[in-house]
Length: 225
Length: 55
Image (cartoon, rainbow over all chains, first blue to last red; front, side, top):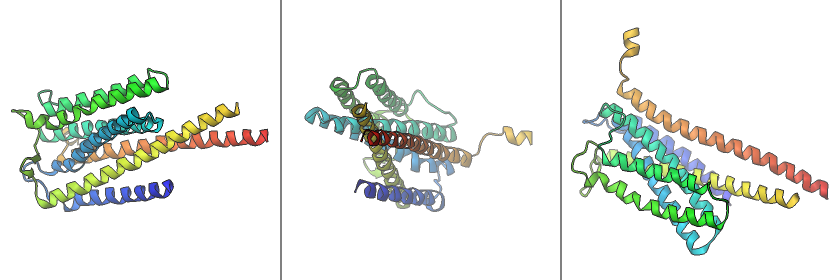
């Protein structure tokens, strides 16, 4: 059942990513303001939103762990945060490349959006230092869960930072008046976002299956020795 | 030739670099997971052998 679901998800992911790339490079119109480099937007923003989704999912699983003390929820929270950090690193790298193409600089410390995302990313990097500095067991699971829940508070702050800022160069696409792009651009963006979310779901399930298999093998070895 | 190689990258080169980074990250992740699953498969086979030897 799981294998069928994972295979279907992997196939859907491949199809959606292929479709998204075709739409980005052959269908989406070139932006009048930013030119060809605006095409980075179609992966950069969905990757950032996916990393928020990963951290949010990790926090939800952490909350479930604290309520039920189910070890599976702890592992699921850890894997979701691990995926979030990977997507977070990709957000910073693709954003930096886009910044160089659009603004002429790799990074701007005066931009709240960038700095807050970096803070969020480093906060979750520290999650691994905390987790692996404690012996496996309920204490480690409790500490990790509480830390994951604290981190999720930074997500709305990071998301709203650009709207709270008075002076910025980072573009605002989603305002209170809706998405600031044409219908076709918004459609391509939605397909890319769906592709990235499916990629996250696929990677999450594969990593989770690997971690569970690893735990079972370890348990089996202990039983046989 | 020298002048063209030192000129700043064009917009499409930045776009290509951004998408290439994403591709490399995903590829590296898949390779790492494949290696890990291969190692686990090997360990599992060894444990099955051990269990069989015990009867």
